[in-house]
Length: 419
Image (cartoon, rainbow, N blue to C red):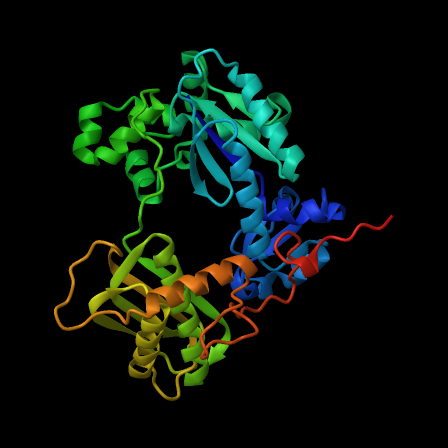
């Protein structure tokens, strides 16, 4: 059996944990730089606030409907997500963290477990220990657990937030209920093609012949079909070593100052280097990108990238940062105001197992230095140790005019209890 545990309106729920006055109130969370709406509470959805709404256009609507609007508090959300996932690991060792607010669980050897009670216990413990409400869907396959989760979310009173598909009758009823466009793995193009064949629900999809699905689509769609039929074909995707690592960010404003952009790119390169060392990889190639604000058509536009190939693989912050900053000088154009930059490290190989270069190699002093930097930053947090060309005050510079405190990750923001 598989379970999908999904946190309800996760970002909004995190805000409510530390501010109970927000319960049953409409809430909206904004994207980076307070751009557009990326999360809404059920109350905000009911009022008609759309997902992705640009806040500068919907500011009046939010004020008129008393919708509380907040900047994204990613340190808080990330920490709360980690707490939820740690709790889920108490119920089974096989957990796939699918996103920041949902995970798949696989129950191997749970032959005599009452999954109705087990699902309610998962929901109860997460809510009690973190304050985050969840919905739990349990079924014989991953795809069906997604369907079960949607049923639990749609009918909270009847299901109490947890629903189990454990019979053929329940499976057929669920597939006839869920619309094809709402099925996990059915994208817009696939939905359009299946609709042309008369498929309106998931049940219509599974009635199609296997051979026809294999011929017209691919093995992926066939596996999804079998999963919906109750035949497990989709397994847990356990975390693997990444083939490329990227750090890209939008700036809080547009900038034509090359020194500012160099500082940002250096910070992005530092983050990529740290991620490389975490997975014990080194890179042969660094890609740096710069782009202007495409929404401001009246300004001069430019988008460029530079590929830096190294003669030896490296995970050194010093080497990667230096190469990235030099690439900025090649890409940058005077008179252009840039809005976004990014650093991508690719051509990854294991740090302890790669082809050596006969005439060129990493400075041997870098490896122990990186170890000390990582150890100190892990111990004291918040990037206390930085390169000289980085901003010593802030790591991520975003417009966050509605930011709430980082209750669980910053001692200065720890919650205060008034007695």
